[in-house]
Picture 1 (cartoon, one colour):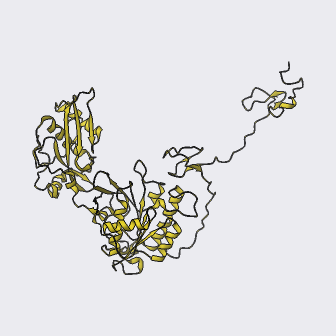
Picture 2 (picture 1 turned 180 degrees about the vertical axis):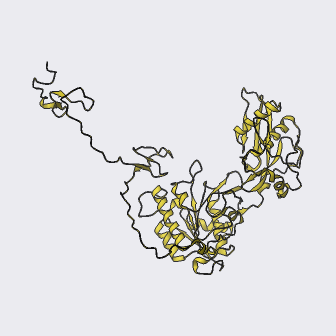
Picture 3 (picture 1 turned 180 degrees about the horizontal axis):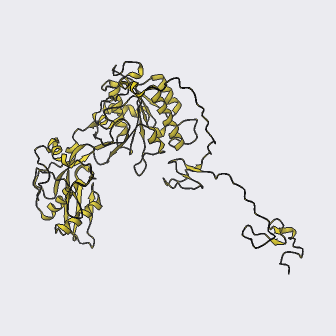
Length: 496
């Protein structure tokens, strides 16, 4: 019996011939219709590789287009990525400029680190900046990156540093002040930088200023001025006309970084780049930027605090466990050899709820004051509020005190804070936190002149954690050498 819509011969109606395909008088339903012996075999053709899509902000890739990036959560930044050409396109050539030589015959005097005139920055860089090195300084907006680099450029231009002039043909290690420093700004106008330089006292004759955002023009300035130091503020604002995309995109940042790094290596020119950061604090742009440069520094600081910290995340010429401390004032930024004075209230000893501890930032000891407040709570779940201290760490310390020391604070609100906006991250400050809380709960002051140091554990033990590098055995000597803590006694004998 014929089905509706078809005649006895199995031919489809004329008006619906293009909508249905008949195979042997039956409707062909595709490869799943395997019960029909008269069905034609299905042919599979090898399809081309699906197009790849890339985020222009962070470099995230995906096989399908998406309106929102899955990494940086930005809208409208995912575009189709051009496929790469198959096979290598570079042929081997005979090296003529720099043939391979034995490593023992390489001259190292021209690659020695030279101080920049800012002692705290030199501490982080490993003694200074190396000719031909590219340094990336990243930080949040308004933290003081431009102010710090303006001070560095002024010191180098005025001859206050020992930056060698080997790039100009002089003998290695020779100095010939004043030098020329090229400061390229892409975020501000030349007049705005001039006003800030006048305010911080950075008006050096050898400091050259250029407000440019074009990469070719920046390279032209480098060729024309032949500087001893190049500062670019910032790398996300410079763009190349040969690369598509807006300034700050993945392709633009990669091209700008490659061009500036090539110029630095070819001319033995030290370059300092300013980088933006994302919401989570990482360097904005592709991860390739951090791999290309020689040094990556993070500039940290709280808007409500004068203290600024510079940490080395990556350093090919020195250690990465150093930290530089600066004081940001109205007259500029000043290095701090002992920043402990910013973390002490100087209200005198004998106040219940206060405890002074010695923590380690990089390789230097810092004395900071911990303050605790314990009050009765009317809530079912008492508050545990912290400022500068990890809240989960405080909860564990209170649990250890309740279980092993008999300090019952389940019906009390506990507030713990640091002075000066300092952040406590190492476990060695657990004992100081516990003593400040105990001192406030018992309304008894801690004995002055001693600085506790120790970590807490669930077994109610206190001491140095296995495998840690916090330098606990050296803390007594550190505390006695710190100018803000001289006259104190070693930790381990604290009573409350």
